[in-house]
Amino acid sequence: MTHPTSNTEVEFARIVQALRRTPKVTLGGSKKGFGSAALCVGGRIFAMVTSKGTFVVKLPKARVDGVVASGAGQRFDPGHGRVMKEWLVVESAPAGWLPLAREALAFVGAKK
Image (cartoon, rainbow, N blue to C red; front, side):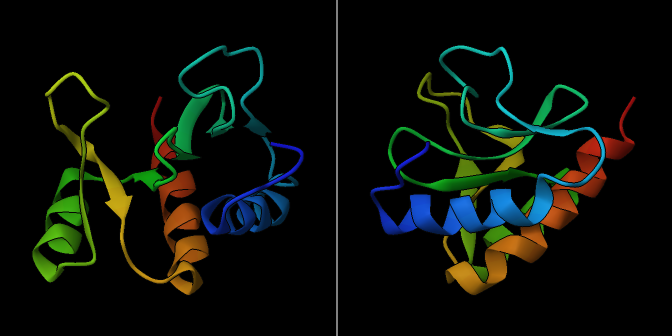
């Protein structure tokens, strides 16, 4: 993702820039395919832009449920028809993405 082309990619590049200096945060790493351009902490994905150009974060199920109920997002389906309970497609304005990415970083970074 060296040359962002969509608004989503531009906003994600800003998030990457803001979070890359955080200990254990990397961009993709050695992954190929799914997650190759995702933000990871300790090798685990916490935020990404999908091939369809949507911004996705990993949050606790209850938090995802709340955001979905508010209408600001929907559960993520990676394409095999099985909705992921801790993954959220963010539909809010990009101004709210960095706080959600930080929240996802804290959530995934705290998991062992």
